[in-house]
Image (cartoon, rainbow, N blue to C red; front, side, top):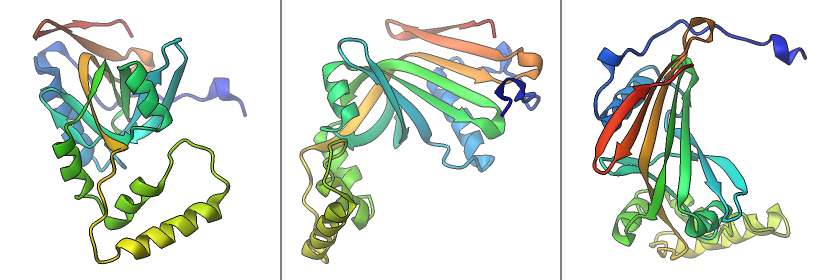
Length: 211
């Protein structure tokens, strides 16, 4: 494979200062809605990057489950690798890539836990099988094998069939409150458009970055 020769020209759109909404959360919603209209597969898929206290980073793909004026919501096992890191170091970053629109959004900020009431409401909106998976999986922990977990899933499914799955204490939501949001639009000849918002106190300001 000649990876050095692999390249694609981005020609679909541009991002001009006169087009950008002054509220980056509203600008995100606009781009997100356009990704849905463009039938981008799983437009709410995002990379979540976390970091340990000794500055060792890790990243994984998550699904965005809510957008509020305060930030971006996702759910996970609090005892998972990312859950432990976020508890130790609440600084995190998100990246959305909508390749079909030649767009990327980078977000940096601080996370806090979503209220138990809001988490419980979301938990019971999930399919029954997803609820079962949430309560039985020791996420990120080593297990004996797949058969063991499948057997536990089967037993737990039978146990709560026709009833209510107990709400787990180890599972819940995080709200990432952004301090920086960057909108990236691919352009021809790598002359990409980049508009970066930063929050100072309660106000947002923005600048254009060199590609």
